[in-house]
Image (cartoon, rainbow, N blue to C red; front, side, top):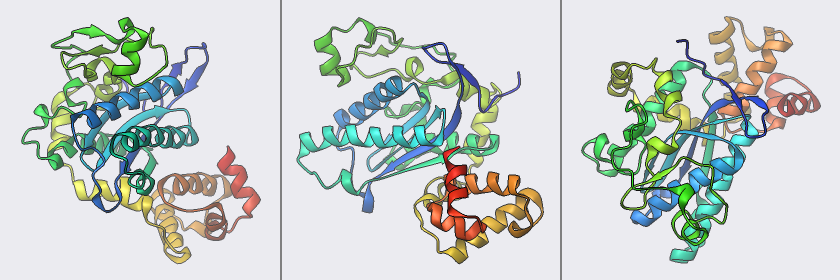
Length: 306
């Protein structure tokens, strides 16, 4: 079966919407610890899924370690995805500040959102996130509790289901799931520790389809992954602000790679596509894009609004 990286999905209101894969990371500045104990990890993961449910996004995978979190979602636009990432940070900040009284830590925390615009880019991001468990001292990715690794290539099977979230009382929902929202139509399952089982929450079918339903293909990608290169693409490039000269060189290099001609010679329709990619992949502004792409600022804003 052919893999659809940007599938059409039916929303709860019956609308059919095309969804796009995005990688989102939340990183503590200067390696500040964002998750200090099991309760912090558990709370963040539950916040992640409650917000995804509210905003009708789909979480494909996640991995949370002491000073950062990574997750891949399906969302209908870049703007929806960045709003989702900002809302996760805002709600988790409330948990962190109330518990520790350290109001400045999350204020100095950055979130980065990147469109995964090719199958290879998507697969590398999916593999990279799960490998992050090793950064938190895990000897084996299989044994790490705070990632969705145990949800993949298991056909959605849950080894130790205890209770369903939809059966929680209102008070239990507030205490266990940290939300006042009614969660009566979700299929999420809690284990004996009241932690969410990822096979019941993540879009594992999309994950497995991304690797052509071949676990060997996934494990090979995991094994040969150049983590430094992927980190540069997903995180470092996004938070690094380039000057106009460097941004022009970057955009021209991509133009040569994509279209085999320089940026100045691109027709407007191809230049528009490249501009959107640069906006989604790098830290830049409409004003800088107007200068680099030699377009009027109003034209750049029009393209971005589309």
